[in-house]
Image 1: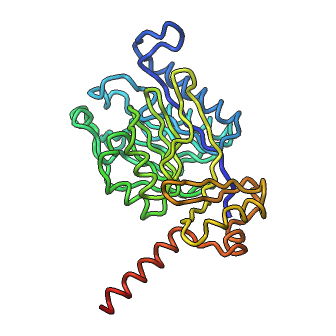
Image 2: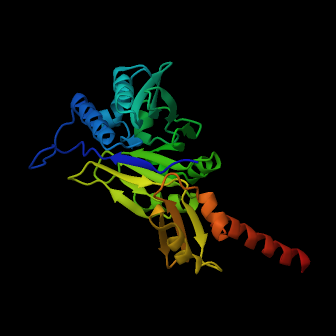
Image 3: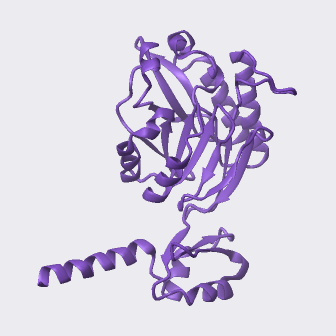
Length: 312
């Protein structure tokens, strides 16, 4: 049974000076790297379990035609610095960079564990034409990795436009997807969260990094003034349809009180139960009140529909 986790995300606003009057500035990779590392420290101070940094964050704002120039080996200095901060803060870190291996340049998202070890690397499957002209090679496989907080999927920027990648991450059991990017992405991120029943965390080079729950609701966002935000999420949160069990909503609240958080979605006819008490088993909540989870209810309806079709 996983406990509720604290997820943090960031935005960098790399084309803007970091102090008033916030004019455009020429990004300096060393200064941008230092800014990203400081955000990891800030997330660690908030006791976050995972923090995301944007796509190619240290070299953000520099032309994609120079990708090969900024690429590092897997044991290069930027990767080493990220690993050290993950270890020092005991936090999972997702960050974007340009990686060079066997003479090939990839735009990668790297996942470091709390011990600073590299858990996994995902190579951007769908780079832009400009990136390809700059020497970036498209990746092949989806990236979903096991962590101490659950199964984490990785995607990068232009990947937003290829739906099959998101379907593959769901098929591989992703509970949370970290999408790191140069731009905000907008509504498609919410749609993917709803369609595939996973949490989506975006981290961007611009302003609005977001944490989006499984209904597609934006829970929190970074801004021009706040480049780090976090939210406590129960990845074991359960969803239910109101058909035949709307009256059980109050029963859950009465029986479990402050140990749970109950949310209702009036237009969708849905409600959810998440834990505030990490020692509570949601399996026991479901069993004790005879709740039917949303996926199980939909499966029941599908079987009933099939029986009628087969008998007619």
